[in-house]
Image 1 (cartoon, helix red, strand yellow):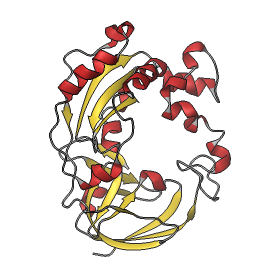
Image 2 (image 1 turned 90 degrees about the vertical axis):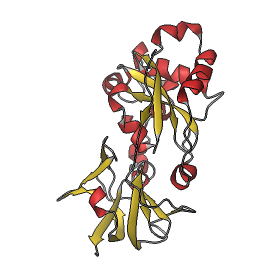
Image 3 (image 1 turned 180 degrees about the vertical axis):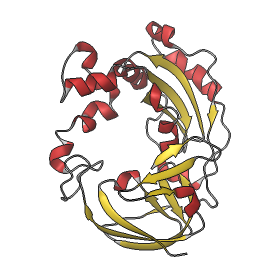
Length: 256
């Protein structure tokens, strides 16, 4: 889903032959019917392996290389190719932000500066604070590795979806984080950066979130009650992770 930072967040889907403002579907009954696959990279209609890519593309495409999820493995700053040096330079050799966010608990993360606040929205963060800006992805990854000693780098998606998050001071967490960071990174600290609050269009949080598995249940009907992160939340506590289902062909019908 495409997102726009407003209050609440606005969600859109750019389909092959249509454009949908997803917020307008809240309160309506929707039918979803899974019918197959289409790799996001090669467009072949073969089983998806991970992240919307078939197995061959997942292990060959630069968009799915290990440095995507582990920034500390970035090598473009040394001119060393992983899969596609030009692509890697384009993505890695630009300003990156190390941040703290409240997304089912406090977590640390790294994102390209131009991806703020999209990255936070995709993770369902209700509060986020940039703490450090580096000139490339590698340096941000080094800092993240250090901070993972104290903070998780994973989003607890069940807690993010099911709990009304308590207000937490990210300023106090930032102080703890900076104590752990090597003094060589002090010039990259973002002094005086403000915490960002994010509100989502949710009428009802699930009590026990049950993920929709299209392989086991190819047809689903339900009333949409909210959107948070990249999740659709339905009235019966079923949740559909739109991002995790990339590469699957799903027909959608508005019933009422």
